[in-house]
Amino acid sequence: MRIITTVLLAVPLFSVAQAPPAASAPAAPPADVDRALREQATAFLQYQKEGNFRKAYELVAEDSKDYYLGTNKEKPQSSDIQDIQYSDNFTKAVVVSASKQTLPLLGRIIEIPTGTNDHWKIEDGKWKWYHDAAKEVVMGVLGPMPATATAPDGSPTKLPDLSPQAIAERAAKLPPPKPSFNRKSLPFTVGQESTEELVFHNNSPGVVKVDADLILDYPGFEVEPKRFMLNPQAEAIFKVTYNPANAPSDKGVFNAWLRLTLQPFEREYRIPLKLSPPPAAPKP
Image (cartoon, rainbow, N blue to C red; front, side, top):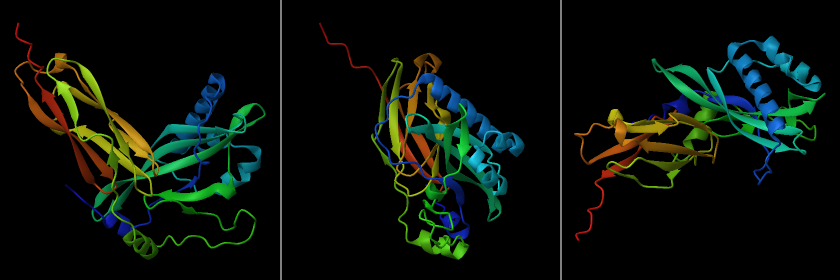
């Protein structure tokens, strides 16, 4: 098991995001509304990734253009939409996306998971990105913190201290991340194609990335997705599929593992994959 804690103690691992509203049981959005938002949000994220901020600017709402021009813009190496939370009769939404950035640390390059919650609204019949200062927070592996210099009522407030020393002091008070799983092992039967699911729950106060692979990459087994970015208290479902047609016939019963690596902590968790022979046919 590899455990690296110097990431939390050495550098401020944060990205600016906007906190989504409290979770509830939302109604399904109209298909055309959802499709239009996903197209706009995907384009916006791609422009950010490419550094094409002029094109991204065209997707910004009128009341947020000055804010967007004045912000420090970073180019994430990747970004994927993971959830959309609608409000105001499907005229506003928070698009939750996962990103990653790389950082040189102690002579090596580490991958930093970050989460972004972008606010969108319909303006002149089209979805536009907008800034909501009252909901802006700093998101990272240490959890959310206020990011604005004024409170929602307009009164001044102190910005969070993002110095390495302050982050180290805060990180030292946090318990090690302990994700939870809904199952202790995944069972399979020789010769019978099947898919088993494992739910990974992020109990960390901040954004994490989970890498999934099969130790020894055993033939006949596949895991999806290969990686997943998770916000605090979010869940990811990993599916392991056994296809006996792709497994060598001379391989008998075995025990292997699904390996989930929590980044940037590099902490491994192993879930046994148990391939067992089919039950014996009853004697006549």
